[in-house]
Image (tube, rainbow, N blue to C red; front, top):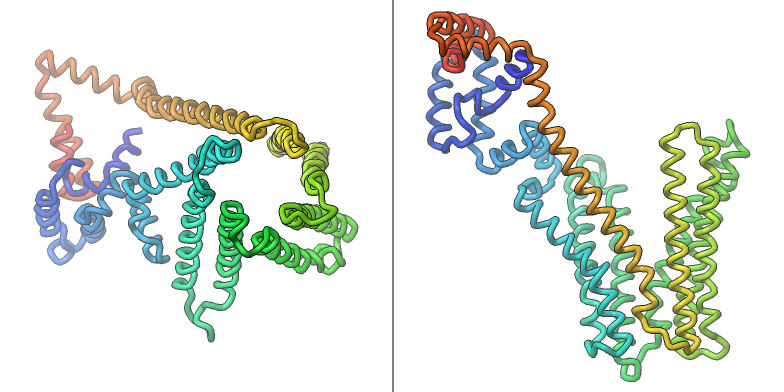
Length: 446
């Protein structure tokens, strides 16, 4: 254990420069100059490696931002920072203050979307709030702005990484970000049109079907992309058809069927909803809700299939993960079905408030919040236990500790000569390992 501790100390930037972690920039510069003159290869050719370590330590500690990263994450954090800068990632993202601020913004956005938005929506629907609908949907505008900013930043990063080739590295890199941008823009347009139509249904010229048309186009595009991607596999053109043709075709057809059912039911629900809100003849609310009930049935069927697939899994961990996911899907499906049932009754002129309809949602949200808090508490307790364990193990297992205590008691009894001899021997060992700069430190530590 003493060897590992000495290696860790040798790799510590502060120890290399004979400094404390609270050293000032002037102290860092002064210590580096002294050690650089002492270990410069021109003066002592055998200390070139030591000089490189000292120079690397000074390059990190003399930079305030790199020093902050090193104090928080160590040398690996500095290496990650250099790699991030090489790939075009802003260096401020590795700043602890920036990370805390970004995390706070994300938490506030999630809180607004999951808690504040449902509450004010219920109050607006039940007549307890007179805000205009664009103001009620403010959390959605904020979330859209964050998503659009993140996708634009990701596309700019991939664009900056491209290099070489006839297209300058742009070929095949902008397709995915562009598709994401199109999806977000379609959703944003649909949300704006629907908010304007709901807020002023008589003064706005376009219909609800027109307001929902961007979402309809998005679903149609996603269905078409899924057909293009999974069509060859379902037709038997995949690479795995030579070895296991039956299993490959069955898996591809199952995935394609499930995807088409999901997208088709969502598309039908959106089209029927627009027709019902426009008071189209022959469209009732029970017909609008039929695709929603089909989605709930599909959730239960897929959960049952996932639970049944655990019998074919040999690994215990994967089996438990699949069962947990299947049971969680069933629970969410039951709660969503209860909300859908309450919504059906409200649309059938049964006096049920919007808050009662969203009660299962708040139940799920409360359970997730409790589980998250419990997981954080368990993680904090485990981290505290791990931090205290190495110190206790070192006191119990390291035989040098007991010898150190005996030596300390002997020195208090008057054996100063033995202490001096031990310090000399320690200094000689350190001098043989890392050079003359460590001799003084070894003597002082002894």
